[in-house]
Structures are given as structure tokens and as C-alpha cells.
Image (cartoon, rainbow, N blue to C red):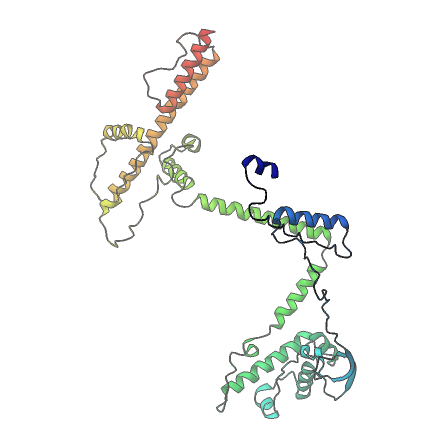
Length: 412
């Protein structure tokens, strides 16, 4: 620095005194940390944060070290308790926490008792008498039901012999139903029990016996019987699916319904043979022979609205259809009487079918001639299809393919 000042002619004593460099803070390695980890932390602090940045670790130890959070210890004590589910005043003891101040048994809330009905002697004499049951048996039945919470196998086991389980259930539910209905119909009744479940429920002993017999039969089945039953169920499902498919195909307006109506119409004229094979694939078959539907809006309408306007689906066949109608001298608007409209609609449907069958026949003849030409090698014009017929778009494509194929063969 002094040599530069001499070259520039500046006195070495001139200028402010150089500012002292700030002292770099020294970081003491904490106890328990390895030297390699300490060097990495100090290096990251210097590179990323810079000299004035925040260090990656504290420069000075905190005044108080980290303290472990102390959990409050809950003690236990030997304490007595009572059980509200018991009828006596028995007191037992168990270990309980100090912060649990309840004196009742914890699980007593799960003791749910049945709210069984009770009756007086007067109510029994007026509403609950039964020729097959005496008063003592009925009282015993109600007492056992109240004692064992309607656990019917236990009630039946405690009841004297001579009564079946179904008889006990039938007698109990009939008495409850009669008792509630009588109390609802009383003149001084303060509450309506007609919507009570016991008042609406009627036990069917016959159905219960049949259910148990059927269950026993199912339980006693052999493996072979189970396999046969599964097989019959699968066959029944397949048959049901087939019936649904047939019903769907035979609905009004479908191709199956149209084919059935056409076959019936042609059979009347002795032309029913081979109908299904001949008309397969025709686009206008669906709904072709259906009767005109009733108009939705008007209850009364002109019969001329029932005149059919059916035409071939393909627009290229409309000209041929009109030509056929003219040849048969079919009027555009016939006299709208009931027999005329019915015959006109049938004739129009037959003409539509005739035009489509003629088009299909020409297409099949062309394909037949094309196959014969390919079979004989394509030589000469004797096997070529006739050009005077109109075969439609498919026929034109077939002629083009045949001409391309013959050119390739002649070229080779």
C-alpha cells in the first residue's frame, strides 16, 4: 500500500486511519457434540448466512438448560363402591384413580331392564281370560318374562311342562296387545297406546312352527342336495334372463315384433316360407307392420291421421319406392275409411319391404357374379357382372375392387 502512495505522490501519513476489523465471534463447541458435526454447522453458518448472518447454532449457552416436562402422577386408592343395578345394598371394594370421584359402579349403565306390563285382577277378568289358560299360569308367565327379560328359551325351561315355546309367546303377546287396546279404549284413558309396538304386533304361532321346521330341513341337507339346489338356482336365473330378453325383443316396435307380424301377414296369403331368412338385415323391419298409435294430445282426431307415411330407411331407395307406388296405382291420400286405411297401411308396408328386398336381391346377384368371376380366374367378359343394373354404393365399391384386381392380374 505504501509503494502505491509513493507512485501517486501521496504522503503515507495522509488519510484517515484504517478502520479496525471487527472481531469474529468465537463459537465454543458444546459438550457432547462431535468435532465433525460442529465444523459442519459452523461452515454452513459462514457460507449461507455470511459473517453478519444468523448462525446455525446458538453462540452462547442458555442460562437454563432444556428441562424435561414433568407429567402429573395420578395415584390409586382402595375405595368402596355400590352397584345401582343391584337391589340390595351390597358394598364392594376395588382400586380406583384419585381423580375419579364417582361412587357408583362404572358398568351399571349397561344393565337395561325390560319394561314389562302388569295388570290388575279386574283387567284380567274383563279382557285377559282365555279358555286354555288359567290365571295362575298367566301370572307365572308374566313373572318369568319380567325376571328373564323375554329370553324365551330360559322362560320355556323354567315354565312347567305341557306348553310349547310358541304357545308361551303367543299367550304373552296376545295378553299385552289386548291389555293395551283396552286401556286405550277406556273412557278415562289419558294416553293412547294404539301405536305401541306391542299393540300393533300379532304373533303368528303357525308361521313360527313352519319356520323352524324349514330351518331344520335346511340344516339337515346333505352336500349333494346343496349342490343340486345351487344348480337349480343357476338354471332358474338363466331361464329368467332368457325370458326377459325374449320379452324385450317382442315389445311393440322391435324387429322381432315386426318379423312376427310380417310372417303372420304373409302366411295368410300363402307366402310365409323362408320369411326370416329373406328379411334378415333389412333396416325398415322394426315397427313396419305395427298398427298406428293413438295420438297423445287429442281424444278425437281425423282418421286420415292414421294413414301411414312409412318409406324405406335409405334415401337412395325413395325414388324406387315412389316408382313402385305409381306402378301399383296407390293413391297418395286415399279415402279415409277404416277398412281403406287398414289395407292402405298394409300395402304401403309391403311395398317398402318389396323395394328393400329387390335391392338386397340385386346386391346378392352382383356378389354371386363377382365370386364366379374370381373363381374362373377373371379372364374374359363372360363372367363380368352386368352393368345395366343399379347396385348401390356397396356394388360400386365391389366393382371398383374387382376392376382393380383384374388390372393387377393383367399387369402381372
